[in-house]
Amino acid sequence: LAPPPSPLHALTLAELRRFFRNPCRELLRRRLRLHLPFDDDDLADDEPLVPGWAQRRALAERLLPALLRGSEGEPLQQLARAGAEWPAGAVGEQLLAAELAALRVFAARVRAAAPDAPLPPHASTLSFDLDGQAWELRAPLDSLHVHGNVGWRCAPLRARDRLDAWLQHLVLCADPPAGTQQRTRWLLLDAELVFAPVADAHARLAALLRLVRRGLTEPLRFFPESAWACVDRGPDEAQRVWESSEYRRGESADPAYALALRGVAEPLDAAFVETAHQVYGPLRDALEDAR
Image (tube, rainbow, N blue to C red; front, side, top):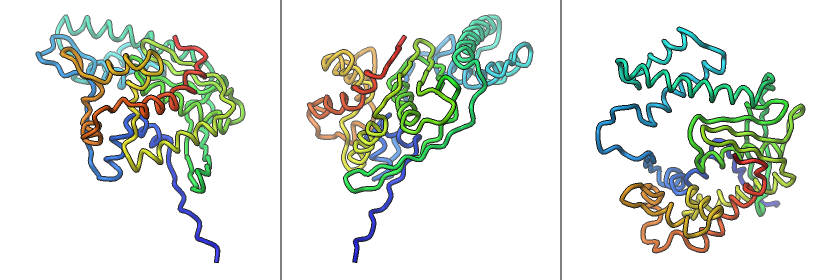
């Protein structure tokens, strides 16, 4: 009798993105059912007099969809005041007016990047044979335009933005829908990423899925911020990003890393460097523009 077929390992694009944001956290969540929340924004040690980044982010999440639809005037002002992020009074009104002006500029950038009407969502289902194991990646793309995929996050550039944009771009190039170019444009407050077409996108995704398979059985030495620093500026800079100092929390402060790597003398070892280049090397090569 023929041996039974191996089980299908199915993964969504959202799960793939979540894994590469923190492989150790995903390993603990899936294998041990441990949820270790971690806010990587620095904790304030005094009472702020003006809104911080968390308040600005909450306001942007509420207002940007309305701004992109063209909302202005009193309806927008009412929506801005509907939350509790901004202080009352004259100072609060001035700060809110300045923040609304900045959000209008960002919304105008997003509209300029995608002036045409969006295309219908495209649902990709990609199949992979990983050394005899059947894997499947299900990836809906819902921000397609004639000139390619356009995404945005109203925040400063982080490693997660490079990864999110890159994974969406690989899916776009591995299963290109009709009527759109194989280009991805990702807008942020302080940066813009543009990816050129990738000819071997399916093979690139297969390589990343092999890392996922390994990372769900053992702690994968991939730490997004430190890994990008390693590829972009060298191991010394990666060590600086990884370690905490008197003035900032390093990536190593994440409790998922502390638990999954307990007893590991040197997390940023040769395996870390190899994995960093395996993930970020093709990404950097495909960057057509990174302003």
